[in-house]
Length: 315
Image 1 (cartoon, rainbow, N blue to C red):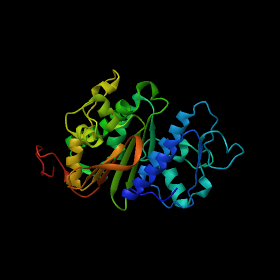
Image 2: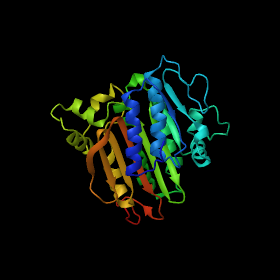
Image 3: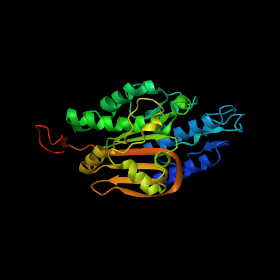
Image 4: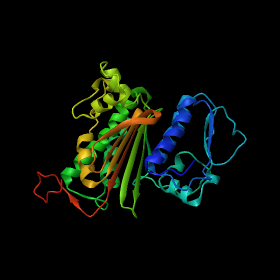
C-alpha cells in the first residue's frame, strides 16, 4: 500500500489497486503498509469494501482476515491486512476510525462505537434512520459547521440520497446483507475539512443509465444524464420505495459556495465538482466496478442559510 491522500493521485492509486482485485478476486491478497504513511477516507472505504467484495466472490472458500501471519496464510482466497507492517500513525488512525475492528482480532485496543466519524458497513435497509441521524448529529454537527436548520436538513437529505441510491442502484435488494454499502467519514481538525466517501459495487451509474435508456451509449453522456436534475432510473429500485435521483444539484451549489469538492467514480467515468468551477466529466484511468462518491466540505466560521430565510443571505 502506498500513501493515499484525498487528491487526484490518491484516487488514481486506490482505484488502480481496486482494479487489480476486480480482475481476479478469487485469490489471496496481503496488504503490506510498510511504505504507507497515511490513508485518507477514500482509501479506507475502498479497502473495507474490497475485503467484503472478495469475501462475497468466494463465499464457499476458506479465508483468513487477520493482522498476523498464520499457518493458513495461503488459503484459496481472502484478504489479510498486515497490521505489524503499519506505522503507529496508520494503525492508530485505522483504530480510531473503527476500521480494524471489522477485520482484525490481533489489535486489542478499545474500539469506538456509536457516535464516531469513521468506517461503517451498511448491510440492512433498516439502517436508514441510523444513517440520517449519524449524518445530522455526528458528521455534520454544529461544532464543525454553522448551518440553518433548513439548510442542514436539505444537505443531510441529499447525502442520505447518495446512500439510498447506493442501495437501490448499486446493490440488489436480495444481496444487501451479503454485499452492502460502505462509507468512511473523516474530520481533519487542523485543516478544518470534513469528508465522507460512500461506496457500492453495483453495476455503476453509467451502466444503469445505459440499461435504462438504450439511446444513450456514450459513457460521458450517460453521466451527464444522471447528473441532470429530475432524471432518474426509477425501475432499478426493484419495487423498493427508495429515492432515485442523485440529488447532486443542491450539493453542487453548496460546494461552490463553500469552496468544497465532490468526486464521483463510476465505471469508466469520473466527475469532479470543485469550488466554483463547472462540473468536469472525464474518462477514468481505471475502470471501477461500482460507484464511489466522495464529498469534502470546509468547516469555516461562516454561517450558511437559504436566501429565502430571514437571515444573512449566505446561500
